[in-house]
Image (cartoon, rainbow, N blue to C red; front, side, top):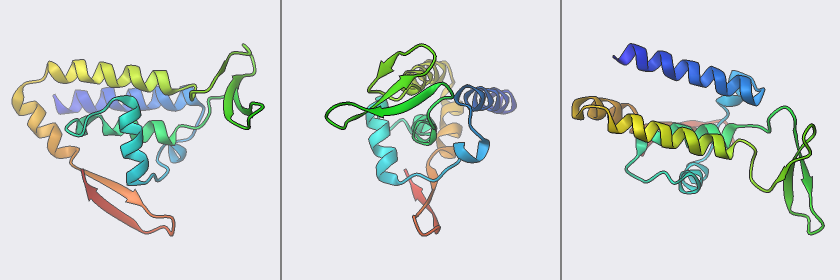
Length: 141
């Protein structure tokens, strides 16, 4: 069962990379503990839902998708504009996709057995972070 989950996860990661038009290295850019906490709150991820934190990290690392650009309004507040459709938004174009992925993963989580959940929770208890000076550290979540 773990193998099929990893394969599905790899496929989702590849779809995300393709959709956002970024490299795997960009997807793995370092983020701070504070940024992760803030994004978890924004995406509605609770403190006990460590199995969902990877979505917050991916959201933080997500650059602007191919057809989008950042502009500023008259007050200097940044917003996003799609070059092709001319759609504008003050939210990152990928936010909704990450929110949907969090919801889908929660539904999948509810279908797992208790032992499967326990095993997966152990995998998501620690997270690697990198400081601005390049030093790497692990933090228990």
